Image (cartoon, rainbow, N blue to C red; front, side, top):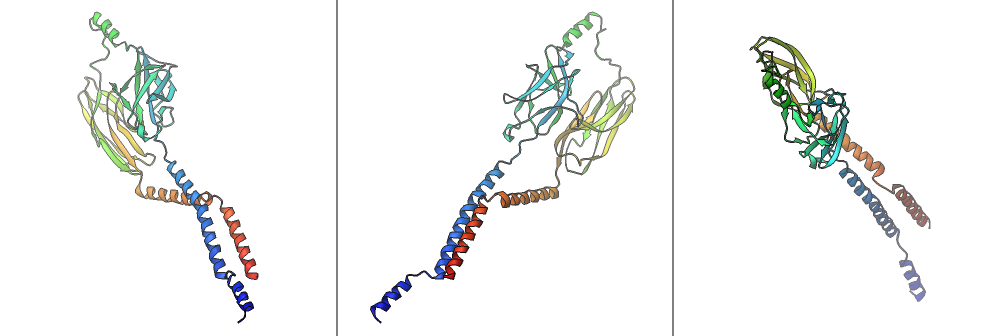
Length: 324
């Protein structure tokens, strides 16, 4: 073997093999795809973290009085942690209403950290005293989804003036008639109940006429301030009866509600919790997961078109090399 042959052999050994070319192309392709996918995964994760919804607003309605008189045209505002979170205008001594379609004073929280914080109510800028079923409340705490009848009062109530006028007249200023019928509610059963959405609920309560006259009243079962069933009850003085409400549907309910039996004179309430059915929850979770997969496929890989173009160029280069 002469020097010329050795020289040509050394030149031939310096040429890359087809296997070497394929490995280089494959490694380059994997690296490019990895760089393109990584930012998309990060972006998708960030979007998922920001999708936590705020708590449900709390809703209020009721009567409002100023200096003992029904207020009209006054602005009612609600503050949570020093910030105004809702407002409404009173008309004819009331604000909002108990019906599902009635306007209400809604209080919105920014996040779950504000659950349980105190809400302060104002009437034309003056802090109001709050009442539930005629009882003065020390504080009203924010509860997501609550629908509460809440009476507001500012200024002098005028109760003392009325009492003084009655005293001078030998009892002629009595506010209530002790001889009239008065329907009181007791023995609500169940008081607190938890059901799956779509289930029906049954409950009962005892109605007692504690007055000295016979009387007739409409007794209501309310959920979240809305009357969902009622019945007429007639009682003799001192009499009592048990009212029953059966087959109350919960298809349109979800969350925690105040429920109870109400007469014109009294009420007894408890807590109703309506939970979503486990099967429905699983189906919704699956739907969310499917949507997330679709979003990741469509939008979670930025630069996907560029990757395809690069792969096409590399493939073309490889074909050109093989033709040589």
